[in-house]
Length: 283
Image (cartoon, rainbow, N blue to C red):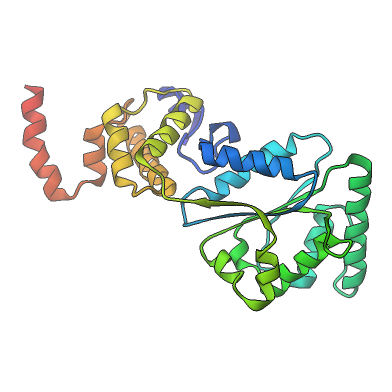
C-alpha cells in the first residue's frame, strides 16, 4: 500500500503489520518483568525460556528483548535464524554470529574457538554474550544438548553465555526427554504466554494506532468487537484489523467502524438482517 494511502488515513505505516517498529509493539507488564529479569541475568549467564501457544506474543517478546539488550553497553546479541540445523550447521551459524570460524570437519575446534571468544568478551566487559532462539521446539535434541555443554564451564558452575529459548508447548515437553532433563533444569527465568484478556487486546490496538499516528482511526465500539472475536489471540486480532484497514482503503473510508466490520466479516444472512436497521438509523 502506498504512502499516500497511509497519509489519507492519518497513518505513518500499517499499524497492524507484523513488521511495525519495535516502539509500536505493546509490552504487557508480564513481558516487561521478563525482559527486566533477563537484563539482570546477562552478567551471570544461563538459560531463559519463553513458551506459549501460537499468536500469544512469544516472538514479540524476543523482538522487544533483542532491542533492549542491543542497547546495553558491551553486550553482543546474536539471533539464531535456522533452529532446524544439525550440529555441524549449528556451529557454523554460531561462528558467523560471534565472529569465529567453525568448520564441519572440526567440531572440537569450533567448540574451543567459541568458548575462547566468549571468555575474552567476559574478561574485557564483565558481560555475557546473548543468544536468542525463536521456534526452539524445532531444534534437534542433540543440538540442544550440545548448546548446554557449550555454555557451561568450571564443572558446570559458570555460564559463559546467556541463552533465551522461545517456543510453543512442544518445547517444555521436549525437556522431559531423558537427554534433555539437564537442560530443562537450567532455565533460570521462565515466562509462559497465556491467551490475552480483552483489556490487553484493546491496549495492543490502541498502542499500535497511537504509535502509527492516528489513535482515533477505529471507533471504540469496533475495538470492543475486535477484542471480543479475537479469542485472546494477538495474531487473530491483528489479522482481522489489517483486513478491515485494507477494506477501508479500498472504499476510501477514513474510519474503521462496526458497519465496515459487518460488511467484511458478517455472514451474508447477518448483513441482510442488519441492512434495514442501518437504513432506519440514517432516517
